Length: 137
Image (cartoon, rainbow, N blue to C red; front, side, top):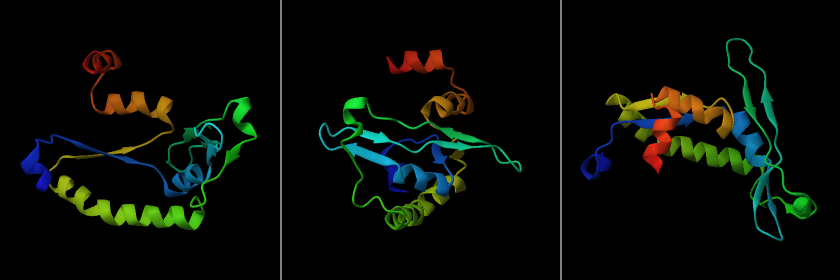
């Protein structure tokens, strides 16, 4: 409600992804302890079945120089990740409900990583890529 007094919000997009996939991606995070860059070794390739769409998220592998220097964050455990997701869900529900009640919430199920999701999100928003690029420039 506070946001309505600060700015005009026409649409809120809620990006959704299955919890098991979020957990797997979080558990796949790695950091190079030399250069500090982030990578992800999880390779998500869920086939479509029972009316549910497939989901593909390629790993984000490190270059050869970083492979032997990868570490996992100490707090990237399944228990901690699931707790973070519970907190996020609890805190976001009132915001989602607020915008849903005003007809301003669009739910978007992610079909995969950025290469798979971006064009579909633009399509769902009725924005073509050329238009999006000219607005961003």
